[in-house]
Figure: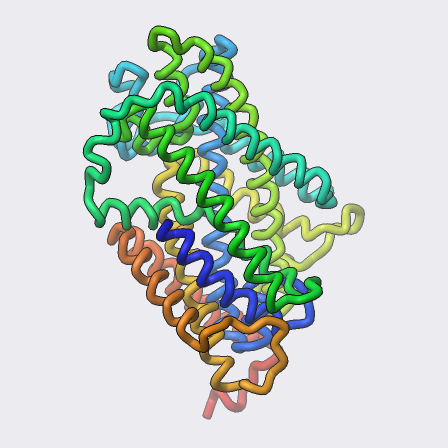
Length: 426
């Protein structure tokens, strides 16, 4: 619920910023046109972090589901080539016995690596997003979730809910911070504000309706999952739902969950493929846009002569995600993706306030109601969720920002169309 509230507040701010620009685009595009080059660079650099780490996390989850599907089919392969090389919590079997201890081991997550490279090839060759195909994938994902909720509710053990909040409010806050990346993508509703007949009414309805549906589904899955098995048994698991079904299906009278597990597996795999595809596309387009604005080398905006796609940017984005996905666990990626997303959302909300002060006369297709209250609350809640992330995540994030600012000052700024050597030397 906390995450949904934050997303609702930020989504409304995002919609106002998007409505000020007469073209569709990303947060980078909007900030470049309204807040200037430096802020746009920070947003763009941050979006690369957000898209890359969220896809690393999803690809590791995809690999875990592929392993589970092979297990369902009776195919068993050495975990050495099916799990990340770094496992902070180790790897255990269904009986809780250690397969690998916590830390590094000799191995590589091949399914996670391969799915990213395969989809990169698809993106290089070109893909046209079909609304009908996208809608079909969404319906499949929702159907899989509803099947899990409907059949899983009969196998809930109330004792698993005691204590209901084992780690208190700090645990709830940390959990909200960690799962925040699952809401990434809701802001795409706001980018369509120029296409609405009545944006002042339709945009908030679209954003809030999307978040309400997602939140209800997430709460339903969480309640069933933690009722099926103890919450500690799925901590750090890349495929918690299907592995919980696997454990539950071994209980007396629960054999039908064996088939429910297959339905959920297929729905999850289809859903994750579509997610990886969309966000790899988005990441490559951010590289492309920043290169087009001369903030990155021109190679990133070079278009393939045959496929007419930014091939170099797409390949770089592919390897940037694929290699780490084979090495690290899902939790590490989720934390980095979340802090990057929350930081970008906070900047967007601050941008709305700044533009209302600096350019109050600028036309807006949509205006966030209640003055500056919602943007201020959005910033406050983003900072609150960021505070719930581990100190090591903050350290990694600051290192990423420092690297980005270093590149901007010593390279990108000097290539910019706004760069004036005489002024910088004064």
